[in-house]
Image (cartoon, rainbow, N blue to C red):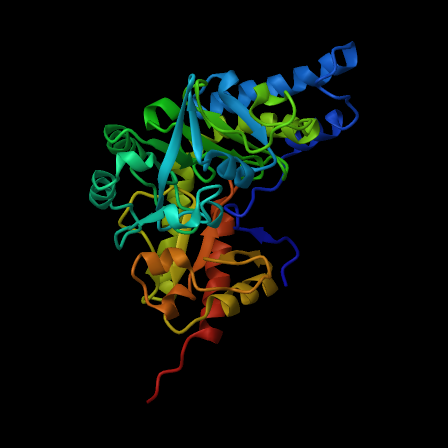
Length: 387
């Protein structure tokens, strides 16, 4: 195994940056940010400084940012049975969720299980907006307003969904839109108003911040989901509980840096093209999932018929390379990818997806070395054809 490992699993998490690490350590000893004394005000300053940085990353106002324990909590918060719009309360009649959404969104949050509908995707993995409109047209207003959840960029394929177009449809039918922007942050320009989303979620550890911090961002502070956690006045009474100041401080620093990483998109996309060309030089039959659609620049999900993802991921790991299967559950077992199944791939290919997601610091030498390692792995694992 090589001495210096290659980390190409950025969609699972970007390693904590030195700047974010320093911010976390510096904030570990601060007091409760809700306290009114000088020590409390010092902690509050760190939280509000981070809030401004996250708001800038999302194209929102600072008051629109609610800190959470991560993007999963933010999603569950947004998937609420009641939406508060000024002094009006709107009951959610049904949740329309993209077929390739992250499991935390597919689970439906606080929406009744029987009230969830699935919006299909095409073979490229892009949401079928005609199907979404047809579903919303049939939505019975008497049941309550529609709530739609559609991610900005898929965590497995990197495919980018047409959020602004989807939002226009949702608004036409009086609904609300939640956009999971976890994989888009730092890779695409974010502007919650330009996207047309009502709610947007971001995760700290996907952009080089610490685990255990995320945010729910509102387009309009008057339009918000009913609180998930109540019982305290923190986060403008949107989310009770003392803020995790150290994690929030690191999140803020990472958000500042993520805005600058967007300028690296062209370079990263060129590296991905080089990587994909190398994959196919080694294995001409390799399939790149979602390649005909717009994708975030760092992500490749590929499969070679006859090579199981689990076997390939272990082989890469033994060679000092970190990649992931298209779908990995908490037990570490590789499962059939619901994303690939929704795109129409058969069960065998849905278990064969290998995700390569380049970090911001990736370079050409690493990509070329990765391709060389892939060549050796493919030579060992490729199916033997009968003579």
